[in-house]
Figure (cartoon, rainbow, N blue to C red):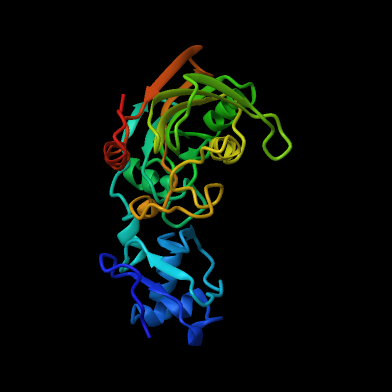
Length: 291
């Protein structure tokens, strides 16, 4: 039995009494008339919401009157984030690459990752990523060509001689032009400097420069400030009322600039990554400037 919530959304259903207690994977398989494997692909792709909240647990049990929505039905994992043939190189010398990480792939420790693609692309088997960006975060990423180079840049990070600037779009109006969040993350000091580029009642376009690199620091800090990153199903709002914003299934976060002390050349290098097209599209939809 299928009850459509919205005539304009062919992938949205309201759970009926006989379906109460079904796992999300089984429920989606039935509604999509697909295999459990395909249903699991939708959940893993983070395109499934229950009552507006992103859910990524296949065994989550649906309840009567829950609204289950699939933002975009994917036919395979590659439909969400196709394996790029090449990764754009923003900077290169004898020791390092700074690359423009695409959305949807891990930086390492996966069959398909930034490391594996770059090793094949460049023919350098010793390449290794020297810091981390989340799967869905895009932008500047340092990759070392040798073990020696990797160890040297790790020490630069430890001395806090790397400055990382991000662009993000958050819920609601950010009132201050410039502000600082100095709140611990996972028990460690974390400092984020925030500059509001443009804001309206619905959303704000922020530039965030971090002086510490704690896990999910920006997302956690902005959630603490009650302005979570759009698309953040982990630290963001439990329920997103806007049907359009529910289509954002990943945090809108881009590493736009990386400035680091080069350990072998005694120089400061600054590398810039332009905003991705998807980021521009949401800025335009929310009537915000890309400046």
